[in-house]
Amino acid sequence: MNEIEKHCKYVSSRGIAQNCDVYPSEIISDRISLNLNDYKNIKNNDKVYVVTSALQVFTQYILPELEKNNIKIKLVTGACVIGVPYEISNYHRINYIKRFFVESKSIICWFTQNYDSNKSSSKIIPIPLGLDYHTLQKKNHWWGPKQTAIKQDDKLDYLYKNSRPFDNRLNKSFSYYQFQMFERHNRDRYLANDSLKGKKFNIFLDQRRDRDTTWKLCTAYKYVISPHGNGLDCHRTYEAMCLGCIPVVKSSPLDFIYRYMPVIILDDWKDISIDKLNKIAERKKENSRQKLMLKYWVDLINNY
Image (cartoon, rainbow, N blue to C red; front, side, top):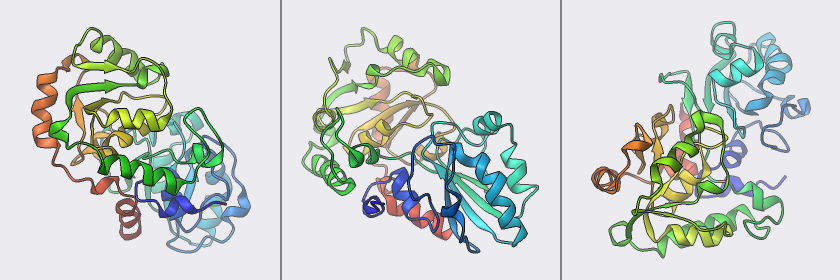
């Protein structure tokens, strides 16, 4: 397996997975099966990565073995569009909070992407979706040619370091989410569209471009609109921050992750105006980029 993603600067799902002690030999997003051989040699206090959609198999076959041998682990889940802990519990008809933390003593804590609870918890800790490096690492795509995660990481960093400072950028928002619309999450992209129509401060990209071109275009603007997509979290949100833009999102349980990050959170898309964005940006633009770094989240999981 190409493990180069674990050495990237910016956070990604595969980067987090590859920094765990145990993870799938092949990570396929939204996969419901597990290769049980990947989970044969789990030791006490290991960090164990499971694709969220495969939790049912993990709970049926792996967890009982851990319990039988009195092994305790840090569970890490992601690479799946389903929300955690509630949506996945409903989907699998398993109350994972009860199964992991009431009925079992083997799960020390649970780090997960696409966190969908409105309550904070010391046991379930939200982690970011981060960047998508795996698509181009596998093959050519309309985004661009096949390339390593490190090369993509370096390109993102180069564009940021060679872009205008935030205050010198166009005082407008940039939208390119509209080429892929979803019904999920209360039709968030449709609601954003409705609220942005006719707004002179927002620029809709006229047609799909390759990713490098789109990233370059982003660096001209202060703001990038980033509604929820198929999953609650979105790669675009992190791309925008990495490029020095401030993404604009609608309030959700992901607010727990976005706290102290350069993100503008709106209660309703109807509230959007350039004056409002500029006012919030004054206190958000200086927020640290530390939580964009893979190392931040690896250290958090290691030291929790």
